[in-house]
Structures are given as C-alpha cells and as structure tokens.
Length: 113
Image (cartoon, rainbow, N blue to C red; front, side):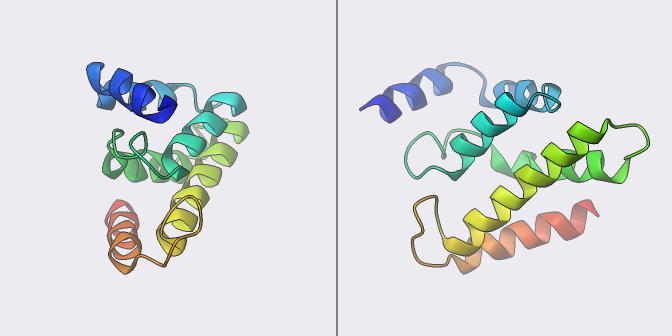
C-alpha cells in the first residue's frame, strides 16, 4: 500500500523532473541511495521514474571527470552499478534474469559512450 501511494504521488508530479532533481543532487550520498532504492525496488514505484533517461547523464558525469566532483563520479558509478545489477538479476528482490532489461541497458550504455 505504501509503495502504491508513493508511486501515485510521483505520478502526479513530473517524473522526469523528479529524476532530474535527483541528478542535480548527485553529490549527496543520501539522495543517491534513495534513488538507488527507488530504481532497484520491485513494484509500482520503480515503474514511475523514466530510467531510460538516467544512463546517459550518469555516463556523462563519468566522462567529464575533470569537471565533476569526485563524489559525483563515485555516485554516478554507484547508480550505474545498481542499474546493471537490477538488469542482470531481473529485479530488486533477485528474480529471474531479464535478458531484455540487460540488453536495453547495454544498448543505452554503448550509445551513451
């Protein structure tokens, strides 16, 4: 019930704007951990945020290390690791591997790089 309420609240806002807000706070570990929790959980919350819009900005942070702070780079890598883990395990609670999810993520990573 709480996840459904949270998902509905996020849907009422602009999910892309929420995701961009998290990216603006990339240097704050607590915000990054909250985003990782949201993207790695199974259920309605995970399906609200436009995760397809997350990979390229994270790769950009790593690519421009000289312009990004060390903590932003570390947190971008942390989130990419969370996305990869979720794609390979097929969900936040360790379901069956999801080939399409991992293939989509790999495609996004290679097109961003």
